[in-house]
Image 1: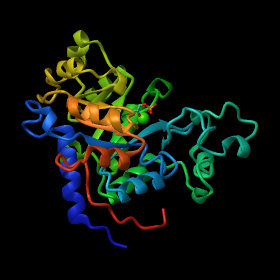
Image 2: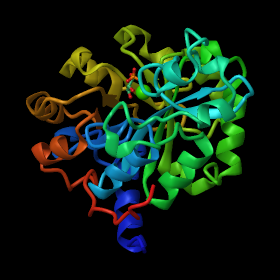
Image 3: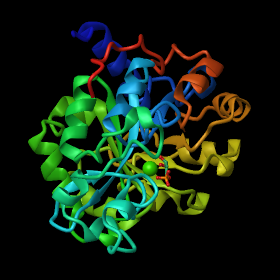
Image 4: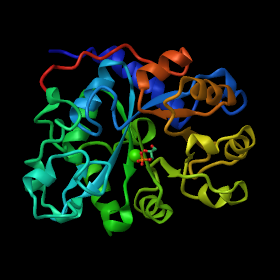
Length: 306
Ligand code: G3P
Ligand code: CA
């Protein structure tokens, strides 16, 4: 089954440039542009989070940006999963009863690939796997989507930054087009972001958190985005973020998470946030009446078999 590449690419690029570079006048008139809507872990209300099914579900809804979380296995493979243990989103406890506390870092890729990462969500998704980052990148690419990649708990995985940049490069995600328009990385760990910036100064990076306004300047040395919990966002804070320029010479952007309430989303949009990260991307997009900034795109036809 074919995608509709021309339309999908055009809308994806529109959404991307709105998120990363922003329309030229977005800084001056932030309220005039709907924020980009980013599917948190894909579309986790439709399919099990951080699986290929979840990113496909987001694509079918026309969601051009997805967020995910990457960690490292015992044997050095990169896998897409949120929790640092396997318990909540796989059948690891049943399959490996003697391996408590079921840390991602205690299992090899072969062991993790045997796990069912879908049944906990719904029996319809039985057989979904914890994807490798490589397979996930290929799927996001196939769907003509864009990626906000969270480096999850990098303090547990020394050196993961170099491993991630290698994987991104090998999968074609570090060419000029991807780096400029289709990819951003974020983390709660500022040291990890500084390492990524040293390795690849061209990467768009986002700090997860809400540093004090007076401290924002130091983050702007390596971060293009400040991405706080939405409850921390005020008009004053947003102005302080937008007033600074990041390492690529453009005003800092702000993506607020995790916004599942339509009223909160509308209020953030009125404030002028650049993006909203949500578990309910279709609902939030509808509530915002998105389209102007490329936050919405025509649904992508995704093959049924995941
Ligand atoms: O994208 C923001 C959000 O993903 C950060 O928190 O715990 O859901 O990864 P968490
Ligand atoms: Ca995340």
